[in-house]
Length: 439
Image 1 (tube, helix red, strand yellow):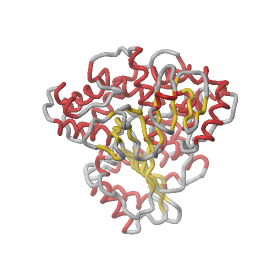
Image 2: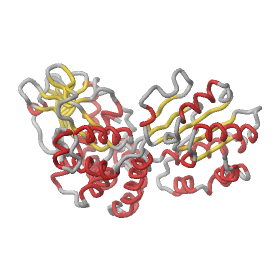
Image 3: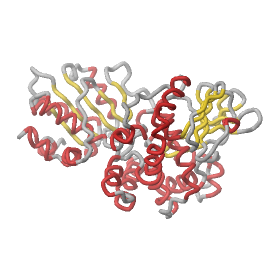
């Protein structure tokens, strides 16, 4: 049965719209320096991304915008943390109750947070669309798992899917260090436009030392998680010990909600960490652990992907994708790598030899956000290129590099050399500049 008092408790602006600024997430966002605020976008959204990435803060700041800037009647805005709901019937009961509170003469707004683990949530939302309930309303849904999205979730309905990730390197720079570049923000550039990429990279070359310095901190300390980034940029101290438990518990909570074995997950992640930056097979991980079955390893790799923790890249060779061959997996953020490494191996230490693989992972994670069908490639001579997209190779060398190391006829060689060069269909540039330009 729906607890109406609990609904009222989650919507204090029904009593006084000024109370939105007393909300925990809103208060932290307003107190942060520099501020990262959001405005409501007038469309229906399904917002997906990992835990602790800022989805709830995004939603609360959109509510604040509606209340204080767009002057929406407070009782026409419903927020509810769906983690306390157990079935689609609970969602429908909540929607029915909101109908008795809101003024039907004006647009009403529903914000259902962390809905993806509610059984058959998509059936409930589909019923709201089909019944006409959402006519004249806007709905935002957030979730930290795509496990329930294996099938087409809301076919043909007026709702956009958006992925909410940790800050990319470019977003990190533009939030904390834009003044270091003394130039306008560069919108993300399509890697297929190599000439444009080359020109903009040359424009940024005078700032490469600043970009490299901030990339070093991004890789070693903060990643793109806002809480860790704010802490580091305020104190210049490693935020890991302060935030490890928060991020570890968030992903373990999702494993439990998916009714999966924490031990199997932990051992699979151990296999990923010890193979980081190298191709591996599920069978090789099963042999390094007590799991025993490569099929179980495959299952937990897929779960990590659906929880937005991991991105797996398959091999491209002989003109085709080889799904049954060795694969490469990277965490979606370098801070998450550190969290999972400590969780799975017991080691906090980040060794210098790990940094090149972390840089490679950051490149791969960002490419996978921007483009579908990213692979790693092995050419006819058996030489590997880190990433491959639409006949473009992308090779990451966290150090000096030569064009011959690209092992592809066209693409990008990313190095720590302070130079931007072009040779035929190949472009060489610093890793940090590539990440900044990609957006």
